[in-house]
Length: 229
Length: 301
Image (cartoon, rainbow over all chains, first blue to last red; front, side, top):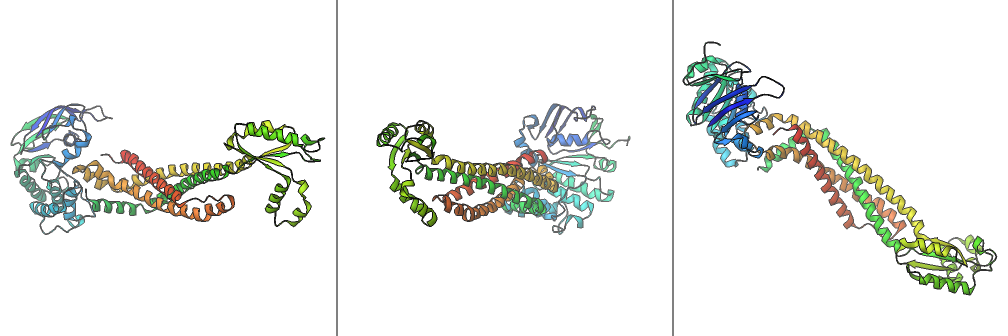
């Protein structure tokens, strides 16, 4: 599903590479934690999957597509197959829960009938039934992140990328967020989650890929966060 | 593509930048109106040229008794022989379409008709004071140079007057007006393009959240850019409508009034419609281009 082959990424005004000859394979339906300290290359990895950045060398395949050969014109179609969740939720403050989720479908031109059918299902899947007409500022951080997850998942992506989704949320609420991610993973969606949260990684017992200074230092199935942190 | 989604986005964008939008509309309106006025003067000039080129003549005045012109000094006016020779000379010129002889009586009649109200003038001037002349109509009014040169020194000719030269001063004035209008129009159009660029930049900044999410969920570039471009188009169109009103007003209150004095070739509504269509198209195209160029810089896709 995601295939990195000897990928190096150096940002323009830095001499140290953000990713240094990284090779990794993520299969369909896998749940992978991407761990490591700040600046270890986790976010760069996610940005490369979305083709927001281009690697300096190496090949990246996502959902069977060679990103180097993907024309700019086709990038939106790649991104429709990838859902994204961030630490800062990135909701639209002037739209309610339903509208925030529906927005993702509206802007890719889905018919309204389809949107009316699908959005309530996803809002229920993330555990926000009955709150569809709340505005984001009326929701707790955990609930806002659920809205973001609903929006990321509403188009049934093949891959869900989560960049520290529990970074702004207290540990008790984080468990609920992880349950939703797990539920999404069980539908067959590949989930890649970058995180600092050792407790969550340890409790989930999923594959762990650890990055340090842009290199993979550990790739362990059913792993834990590690003692160093 | 969902039209009402795009239009609601456009409406929000225009309202958020209301002052900039008004500035764009005003600049586009004045720029396009001046461009239109330039084009209308242009068509007015060509209409008037057509009208006058049928009528302009070269007048070859002949010496009369005691004429004040230096060429006529000493001779007792033109004699029949000289007059006949001149007629043959003029008729043999390739540029000449036809030539008419105007005797003193006819010239006097014309003079009386033109100055019917001026009794002092009429009582002071007698038939004998009017010069006889050949009225020469040229095939192409622009080829007067050679005709005038060869006739000026001929025996029995007092003076050669080219009406075209008189008209040309007037056309020259109109043409410089036209150029002034067009130059100011170009400057304003440039200013409008910069303003639109700025408006689009502001709106791209205001909507960076929305566009960020749109990019993330895979909205196509067209879908992301269209609301911004439409903002430019709508501002351009509104400016065009105001410009059209200004052009219609200028036709009724300026061109038609001036026309009544100068030539009987009023600007047709058809011409005005063509000019309005043209200025609107130019206005909208400039708005779209300005929006697109700015978007490429400020909206990473």
